Amino acid sequence: MTTQLTYGMVGGGQGAFIGAVHRMAVALDNKARLVAGALSSTPERARASARDLGLAPDRSYGSWKEMLEGELKRPSSDRIDFVSIVTPNDTHFEVARAFAAAGISVVCDKPLVHTSAQASELVQTVAKSGVVFAVTYNYSGYPLVKHAASLVRAGKLGTIRKVFVEYHQGWLATPLESGGQKQADWRTDPARSGAAGAVGDIGTHAENLVATITGLEMESLCADLTTFVPGRRLDDDAAILIRYKGGAKGTLTCSQVCVGEENNLSIRVYGTEGMISWRQEEPNSLLFQPRDGVRQVFTRSGPGVGPEAGRATRLPGGHPEAFIEAFANIYRGAIDAIAAKKAGAKPEGLATEFPTVRDGARGVHFIERVVESARKGAVWTDAKFTG
Image 1 (tube, rainbow, N blue to C red):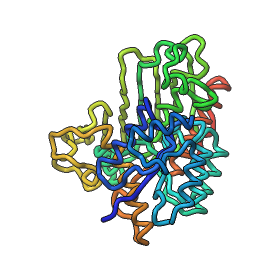
Image 2: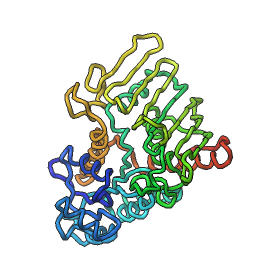
Image 3: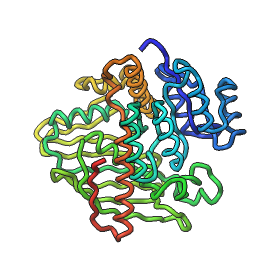
Image 4: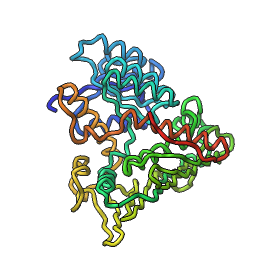
């Protein structure tokens, strides 16, 4: 690709952590530049945020609807190539559907939408319009997650028997939402966050990590959700047993009340011929233990690491790559796919490796099945995804 793409952003204005992360990720490879924005839920704050970012006044929009209308009025050669949606969960569906239906590619934060019905409609909209649609399950972008997946696909673990995945945080161990803390406020509000709290916010990352590395498909699950903080309206802790197609069993736990934890996402996969272990807080090493062989520790740029990890690596070995770079790999893949589509070419490399709208729909299905199981008293519940 020799020409930068252009994009607009919905949400992510002044004081928004995740919006800045997305912009840094896009900028890392210099393949796209921000030219338009509807950066806040109120026109005044949206335009103030646009000024802070140096956007042109005629592309500083007061709302996402205004941005979509304004961009569609521009010549096709001068409108945005894609939109990045970094708003709270409750607005994802309407915004993503409108831009996708209009033929503008989408990168959307997770969880994708609130309900499976919305997810199904969005999948159909994307199929009809033919746009590129990426969901920022950013942990799938780590080089050694890609290498872990390649080991599984190559049969190095044999038949998978057991998976343990956990994502533990401690930042919501107290009722931050009662004091108006912005991130806590919307994440604990069912109207904005959706049917689940910790499960929707970080449990979906754990679900996607398992799917990315193992390719396993859920058959059923049994979920126990807890709200430890008095007065909180959504779960802040979850323990889930999972049965996968083919006989593998899984345990997924996620919590936002584990005092002392920061972003402890980790996974262990055990098969008939070996195991792998990876931690997000130490992302540049992957443990592989063959059943009858010598324990190996793969490093991001070290010996034995395959091309999948190499495509997702920017720095020489020994220089740590982490959170922003993982996000950037999602964006680079989506941007390359959009560029290939514009050029009438076939996507290759990272352009085929990012989470799609279907991955996002599966995450929504997972949330619903977890909530259903917990409401029924932690009973085994069908979790097959066919969307």
